[in-house]
Image 1 (tube, helix red, strand yellow):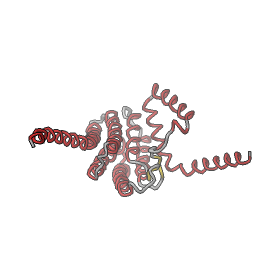
Image 2 (spheres, one colour; image 1 turned 90 degrees about the horizontal axis):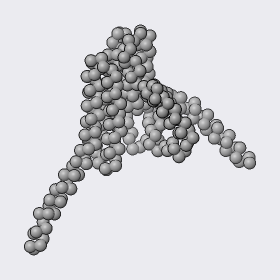
Image 3 (cartoon, rainbow, N blue to C red; image 1 turned 60 degrees about the vertical axis):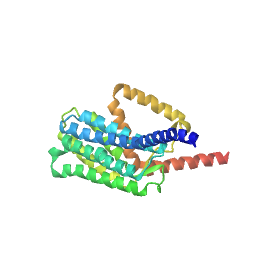
Image 4 (spheres, rainbow, N blue to C red; image 1 turned 90 degrees about the vertical axis):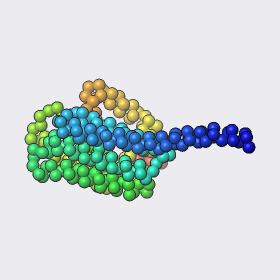
Length: 264
């Protein structure tokens, strides 16, 4: 009795420490999501001040935060429905409202209602894209996203800001951005499939191609890093609509290669 009584306070203290640690682990993904939300808010503030480069950098930081919060939640096994909903709400601000406002301030306001309504379409399609993702999460193919992911849509906007944010736009450039805004918004709610890269090992399957890509990326980063971001994100945005074309060609090449092996 005396021995148990002596151990009881120590045991209770240990349990309290474990509970505090557990609460801290549960809070970590939400803190990252809050950081994502803050970056979106900061991007809006900077865009309002016509500081588009800083706004674009904030969007890219928000993308990093968005990737980390989900990974941390899965690694620590602290995924909750609250976290899923909070993440979606933060994404609407950081990858929907903030990029749309940046586009409006940078290019669309001067072109009239038809152009700036594209900014609203971007936000609306982004919100629909997130809602559809939440509904079908867990039942869809993990290798692909259905529709352009909203972080990638925000990323291409931020990449454009890094390229042109310090320049005075000509009217044709503003018109091109308006058209691009409509197209990117619509791509988010299409059924085009985009690689999620969740189950793809580039280094193991394509070591030579991966090495070539890394060398090319280093060369571009050393000269014009903003061009690397723009080209990579543009290629990803276009990969959805063009996927059926090059997928057929790859399947045909594989069939020819298989037939050649069988013949030998």
